[in-house]
Length: 190
Image (cartoon, rainbow, N blue to C red; front, side, top):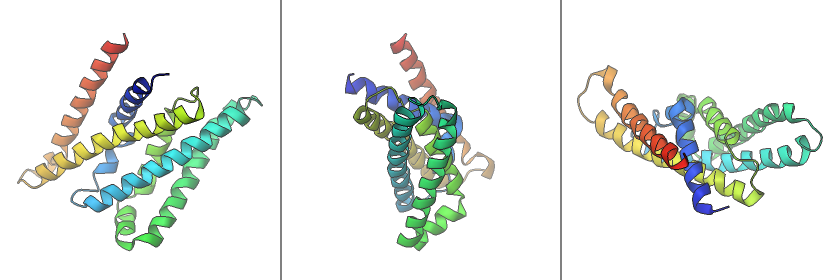
């Protein structure tokens, strides 16, 4: 399969997940903490690669051969929870300040939802290396939107706006861009 097609579809899928709410909460607590935004996204990248790899192996080599596909979702949630818990413990030991932001903003739950969304939408019919590339491109698409959202949010929050509209404008801009990307992708596929 062409790597360009895999990269394009993975980036679009991750942005659709992002716009559906799997990732939109991930950027709100970052505000002016650029280092924390990068640490949080690095956690999501590493954990998503681990989760999708484990899920791929279990699904293709355990659940499919033994006809246990109904247990796949339970296994996925268990893998995601365990991976995020381990990531949280590593962050706690590595940086007290970043762990404070992580804990204060309830990012355990947000990261679990993001990881589950990325793993569920991962293409398990590809071979292992293409699937890892697909998972990486999913993250790349979501990270691009995350960075755009972070920049817009910091610019708008530096102005004097009513409290009710501070986070609204960047979300609408990002969702509009994602809708346009989805519309263009649908036109290319059809």
